[in-house]
Image (cartoon, rainbow, N blue to C red):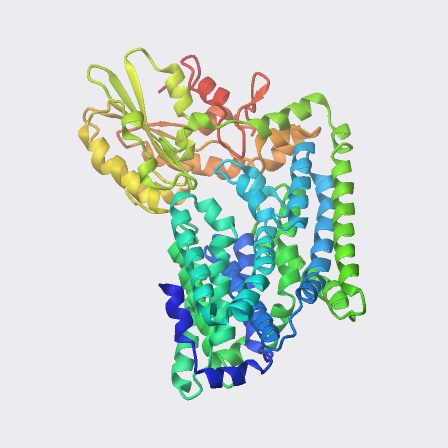
Length: 639
């Protein structure tokens, strides 16, 4: 097993080992550089995921570093018979709580100013969960393809802090047992816990990837590997060249992971890459080596020092900056957000973190710290909860109805986990051919292929089909219906089935292809259309739909919604895509339908309602009523 092997590799002779454990852990400047790499990768990923798609691995780097530092400190104290659980938690609270409290307090003020009543209520519960350090489980319950609460929550990033706090809660007890009461079995105890955590991580990544990502136990193996280096790891001082090579390769691996790893099936086996790379740097880096000097340069040390505060502030800055400007982040905006995040991180580090961390311990300090943390958290949560009764007074019944519609919207008509694969149903085994592919002889069989922007049409097709028609569905989130077979694993597999197995059977008289199109998709779409035999098949391509920078019901829930609609519409962006697709497909033996032009007129005014209900429930997906209405036989969209 990975952990048994890893821990025994670093086991040393008893007499040599006993001599070393008496020494205190020396400060390592290179760890600050690792922290800088970790926090910058996460911040840049959140600001511009397109430019750093694997930047989320910074959290994994933090987990390994925390394991190294915390387990090493606890272990040394236990060996000296000087470990106190109370003192340990007091130091943790003094180190982490002040900056956290400052961040969530300011975030609460902005949330009250910018959020709708329902959004603020959800924020309140995320605040309570964060203060109790269980926000990872709270956000897990909110995870889902169409759940905007996650990406719109200013406290989403606290899930990783909760994971660390839960690790801090269990690890002192485990180490006391392992190196106190059951010293002979210490390696076996850590190996077993680590192995079970890793197995659980891999298994759950395949069965419930959201739980594997947010849960703490599925991450314990990363902390334990870091701790194993602190407890058992001896630098190979006589092999300088080997250390230089391993640390260099490891840092390059971390940088490459930031650019090439994806969230698909993560953490799972993929998480081993950044984890072991970080472990290798902690194990083999030492003064005098190139990587040690590189990670210890002043700018890296500075970012490493403010890394905790920078991490705390960057996500609320992103959320509220976008809400204020009502637009997606452009190049200049991204730079501004990064600068603001660093500036707030610096202020928080020097005026909050340092002030409380350097405060001296005194008699009865533990009880005082616990009381201050509990009272501060309770008062803040109580005040914010009280404001949930005040905020609705700023809105009328119609506005509240729009938000209620957004909150309670049920997207089951997409048929997720059956005919529509998502991140929650990512394995190809979820796709039910018997249910989704129902072509029948002597009937006109229609096949719908694409991503979520195809899946939202299924309800309309099914509701408006003729008696002699059938409707089949092959859809997956984020999967462009082309023969590029790019994207996440489910995309390549499902689209390969569609274009290499199902469509060539010629069982379908009509094929409807729809997606959230981008200009870059056009070359692959043209190649895909060339492959489809259109002799006895009518192929229809549905163009892009109008999109907004915020959910449409949220926009309608504001008193200035008319102006807000104009500010948030991505009219010119979608019009450019629609025009390009229309021109390129004009000479193809396919039917192109401009969804954009059917919803929006030339002045930029777009249909937003079906009766008294929104046409779209988020930035662009159609509601059930929207799908059925737009595909009504009496409408302009005729399939």
